[in-house]
Length: 241
Length: 241
DNA sequence: CGATGCGTTGATAACTTTCAAATTTAGTGG
DNA sequence: CCACTAAATTTGAAAGTTATCAACGCATCG
Image (cartoon, chains in turn yellow, blue, orange, red):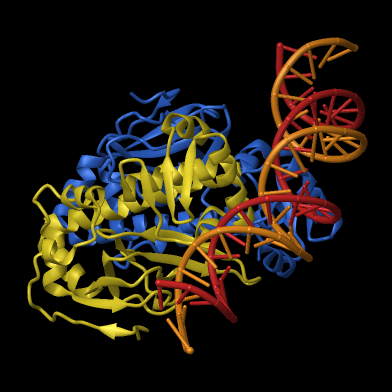
């Protein structure tokens, strides 16, 4: 079962998304809105069918290999999926931020493990319920397909990223995060340097050094370790390769 | 439109898969069979709706950015999808062998370009036709979802691969190819060293050197450059990490 | 038979990791 | 609120891995 610290189930009571999504950034809200042509049909269904669960920082949401009976949507906070390799290295599959749906795959068992990066609230929906709905409602089915396709595309972009140099990876990462969590040019990172390193397939030292180098080149500023200001997006895009 | 060297359209005439799939390896055939619980329903539909096209070695099937109106299935030969980065580097998205379906994503434009690696025959099906069918037939829709999910999973495995060392990548690659194109312990590679390098995010020299090292370690044999014999799969699995 | 393309091998350079230590930040209890 | 402790991040030096540049071997094909 799920390892959680606290449960705040809302049962089958319908909770309007806006009320539940306080910390959603403008860009995340935009994504959520544009997910469907018939606005938020899947979103509505998920809220109706699912329950909201709370997870404290660094607690597990599910574990690799467990049977995958649920689909998840981040309400607040953020989530990382990851795998531990036999030698102890950790590869992060992806970061999920408010509005993101994860573990949508039609597979029996979880391919990755998932943990809350910060204290988070996650909408949890029975996969069967969602699939049953999709069978009856072609609009929902289409939304689910579109989401899976988008996830596939993201993974393909990720592959393009991982063949590049450390500087290129960081540049891509910063621009990617800017799309997600920026307000203006300031990025508020929910994850640690170690998380970034494991996401980009680098060591924490290389991440740190590369960020310092970007700061020296006046491309970014690092007011605090979790906050990064983009001073020159053009330069980042050029570096991205 | 499609860049092709020769067209052998079979219109809407139904061609039994077995007749069309001469060079399909045993494992590819197994995959094709196991794609569906109601055997080959999607497969049948694709043959009914689509046309078989022939592409000569190294000719383009479609190009990145073109509108993606078709879904493809390899009948014979093999296909690579790829992207060219701004600095000229090429990243190969994936190799597709007989039985494999590609470009199944619900996106407007091709994310990758596709070329025939060897002279190939490819079944080409209008995406609209397939989607229309999926709307009416929940079994077809399920098969399509399953294929997309499987593709997503493959990409996730690919990501795990790309953070590893050259030796680990080659070990993974060899075991992956063994699943696909092996007869016993002999692998007949359809692709060049450069293709392998661009798939694994390495240089051709590193691929060559690593293979030579594996041969020195008596893990593989290299009778010819396109043929590789696995002498010690256990060792490869351990290396894979 | 020479040209051409592909693959291998060698030497060197560039980049990233590893190990170690210093520094900053965050959390906790007084 | 401040001081103290632990954790996270940054920085430095050395080692390891892969890329780059160059040359060579080998097969195929006019």
